[in-house]
Image 1: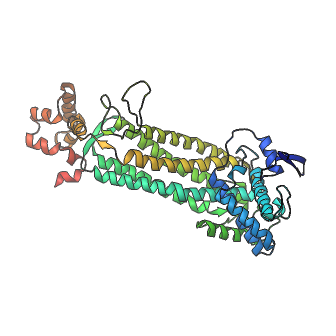
Image 2 (image 1 turned 135 degrees about the horizontal axis):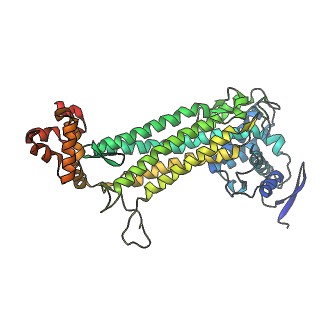
Image 3 (image 1 turned 180 degrees about the vertical axis):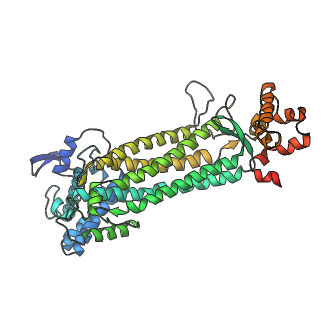
Amino acid sequence: MSDYRVEKDSLGEVRVPASAYWGAQTQRAIENFPISGIRFPRVFIRALGLIKYAAAKVNRDLGLLDDERAQVIMRAAEEVAAGKWDDHFPLDIFQTGSGTSTNMNANEVIANRANELLGQPLGTRSPVHPNDHVNMGQSSNDVIPTAIHVAAYLEVDQVLLPALEHLRDVLRARAEDWDHLVKTGRTHLMDAMPIRLGQEFSGWARQIELGIERVRAALPRLAELAIGGTAVGTGINTHPEFGRRMAAELSRLTGLPLREAVNHFEAQSAQDAAVELSGALKTVAASLMKMANDLRWMNSGPIAGLSEVRLKALQPGSSIMPGKVNPVISEAVRMVAAQVFGNDVTITWGGALGDFQLNVMLPVIAHNLLQSITILGNAARVFADKALTDFTVNEARIRELVGRNPILGTALNPIIGYDKAAEVVKKALKEGRTVKEVVVEMGLLSPEEADQVLDPRHLTEPGLRKK
């Protein structure tokens, strides 16, 4: 038996691997775009399968597709959505900007599988045709934008938001655990007024809480689906109710509040919802970058650094320095954040480069948006579970540093004035002594007054000083 079969499309004959469920148009794309080796992710193929399932069902219900064809298309599309045929989606993301090659990849795989279920060999295109039946009432121009929205919403709902909520909860718990411990605050990487370790963590928790709100705020626009607009948004060659019914069916299949686009011309000519969501993802990434950096500084040492906390040892840190352990989770989180920043630039440019009635940067927008959602979610969960849940705190070191911190003299301003306080601080720094010792020696405060005014715990919550 030959290892390939010959298929025809509008450009002529094409050799397709005999066992492939794709067809001629997919094969041309394989040969035309050997660029990166990066394929569409699982969630995007799942979204395509759900769209093709919904289309067959809606077209059957509208009386446009007979029940026998609809049933086998729906079964084949379910298998695609479940991942059974992922090996038969080989296309590079760097391809035609509309994603037509990948839409046809789905159409051909589903048609071939449907025909196989009806007892026909691969490549027959009958009784189920990839264009006439699987793609009925659709265009790549509304299918791919719809798949981007559905896939991104699914990934946000199932991966990112649960991970961010978990990270927020871990940070809140750690804030409570360490609210009793006063440490040296830092501004400009220099010693500043005291802060409780719990207060520091509460700030991180609030960052993630706000990040969740930002991501959620973008979802109503992501819920609008382009399907039903076909070629340019006018809905040529589809039923007037197709878009509304498709959104309703996809909402039923996913459990998400999906709906037909308010304006199909906007939904196909632009990718503003993807750009908006990417902006929220970038903000979350910036939050994670800040936390990972702070934690690395706090963990630095163990001898020559801050050595305020000690992260759990997860793996050897050096191939040459025995016993060295590095903050590997924080480093991974920083790299994820950097990748999301870069992805956002690509998505922004992709959104800006829509031309007239169609954005033709769809595959690269899809790849970068879905990657950002996935890696942010995974990084947030790893950060919570492997860095933040079980680190230890060097309480003795923290108390020592805060006690020696000359910036405590800031609390003297209302009592002895800024100039005198500065004199006390400079003398303490020069002589390597505490502010408390110097202010008492200079006769500016009694020992009892100094104890009260310079109590680090009271300085973290000024209201306590008035009680």
